[in-house]
Length: 174
Image 1 (cartoon, one colour):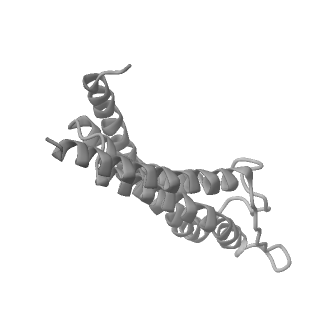
Image 2: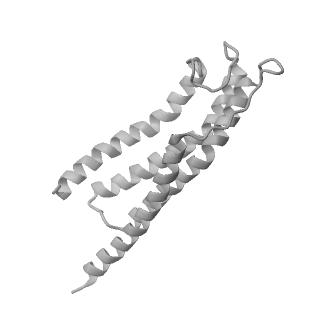
């Protein structure tokens, strides 16, 4: 059985890794769209005229801000949660809220992902000649995974809320 100290040490490492991820994410996204863009074959389900114009790259970047924001919110939530574990706070109402928020973010990801894909295809094909513009809507296993993981986290949040209540009752019992 892991000790509280080992949980705290591991949580510290994860929190630092998440902080690096949180800071690097927007930088990597900007670099991706500024220099590369979706140039890899098969990366998109639509044909995009090459090279991609800067206006199309900028539009693609703006569309990518939607899932990027959700990812960063989830990363920040995890960072705060592991910060609490690092301080030894294992069962609290704050953890329940964090799990609920993560679940909601995953549900938002599930709903937003097809919209993002459609808007991205439209943004990147807008400068194609007439008749070559496209819009796509996809529902993938990754979307379904986000849906079920989000629902599971919301249920876990309810269990964590109950555990926090029980821990508080136990703490107050003399």
